Amino acid sequence: MKSNTKFLIAAIIGIISIAIILSIEIFPLDNKSNELSTSQIQLYQGMDQFDFEPTNIEELLSSGKPLVINFWGASCPPCRKEIPLLQEIHEANSAKLIVLGLDMGPEFILGSYEQGELLLAELGASYPAGIPRFKQTNSQSAPYQLQGQYVTGLPTTFFINSEGLIIRQWLGLLPKDKLNELVTSLIENN
Image (cartoon, rainbow, N blue to C red; front, side, top):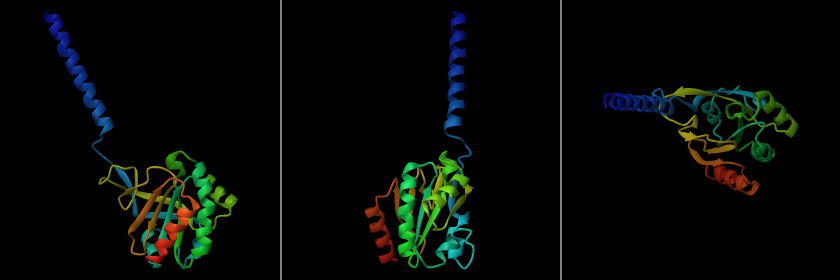
């Protein structure tokens, strides 16, 4: 009887220990995330469209124009389809808004930064594009954020008015007519 009791106690202690270890792995105490707001951006193309080299989103907003920020990756098939549509928006509306592509390929295992630059060149995209440099925070649980809104997959597109407020977020491929509708609304309501 004593050996059964010892075995039962040892089993319970083992199960509780495993549960504690697993809960620490699943819900880490240092719940760090990444937020892009005042964080740095490093453009690798499109700098010539500004009077200065913007290093963060706030500097882009100082132009008084709304922003269309597209998070993408070089090996993401929907992203590849969306880039030419964003180029069309850029060419038709560059006096009224800024299109910004931020390459998240390496973070989502969807290509390298070098592949991203090559893809933009191959597709003839000339709008500003580069690399986001997320700052570490402890306030949110999502891996990547823009003003508290999550970037959970690629492509993700944010429509931001000239005051810096996110008007709309779209996850996935934006159909051309929907992209045009959202851009027109963003410009008209700015």
